[in-house]
Length: 285
Image 1 (tube, rainbow, N blue to C red):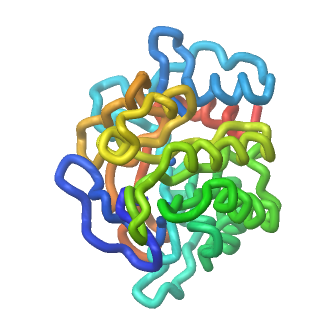
Image 2 (image 1 turned 180 degrees about the horizontal axis):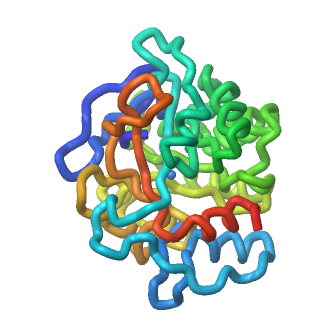
Image 3 (image 1 turned 180 degrees about the vertical axis):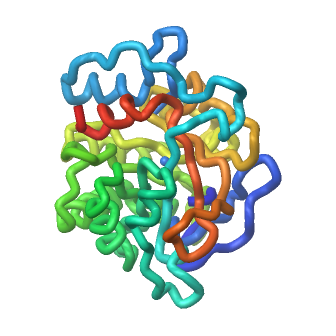
C-alpha cells in the first residue's frame, strides 16, 4: 500500500514526507502504543475483543532514536504489482524470512469484486515459513461498505484465514481513496465495513491510512482512534497520530525497500513493540 488509489497498477510516487494520495491496485492498515501504560493499543484492542489476558509491559523496539531504524520488528506488504513487470514472478518466501522479516501484509481484495491474483499464493508462502501474516482490503469510495466487507471476508474464508488463528494478525482495511467515480468517501460506509468485520470475525480490523487523509477525506473524524492503526509516512519522521489517537502500531516508512526474495522494491513497515508482543497479537502465545 502506498496511499495511492489502487485498481490494477501503481501510479504516482509518494510526497517527500508522506505517501501520496494516489495508490491504485494495492488498493494494499488500531490506535498506537500507549507508552504511559506500557501496552500497545493494538494488543489492548485484541484483549478487549477476544478476552485475552493482558499483555503486560511492552518495550517499544525503538531505543536509540525515532526513525524506522530504531525499531527491530520489521515486515513487508505486497500486491500483484510487486511480482515483476508482468506480474508473473513468485516471491522466494524462505529468503524473505531469512532476511529478518517478521510479518507480511498481503492485498486480498478491492471494492466488491476484485480479488488479487497473488493473494492465495502469497498467503500460502508466508504460512510455509511461519511468517506472521494478514490480508488487506482496499476500500473504494463508490461502493457499499457492507458489500465490500462481505467480499473481503469471503475471500479470506476461502483461503482458511480467520484473523484469529495462530500466526494471523487481524484483517486490515486500507483507507486511501478519497473519491471515485464522482462519489466521495463516506464515514458511515467505512463504519459499516468495520462493523461487519467485527461481527463476523470477533475482532477489530487494523486501519491503514494517514493523518492527512483522515483530515482531508473524513473531516478529521475521531471515530478511528480507538482501534489498531497502521500509519503511512515515508522517511525518518514517525507518522502523526490520527485525530483523537495517541500514536501508531505499525508504521509504513518506505515503498522502496530491497528485501531478498522479492521481485523488486517493496513497501516496508515496522511494529512499535517487540517481537514477543507481535507474537501474542498473532495468537502465538
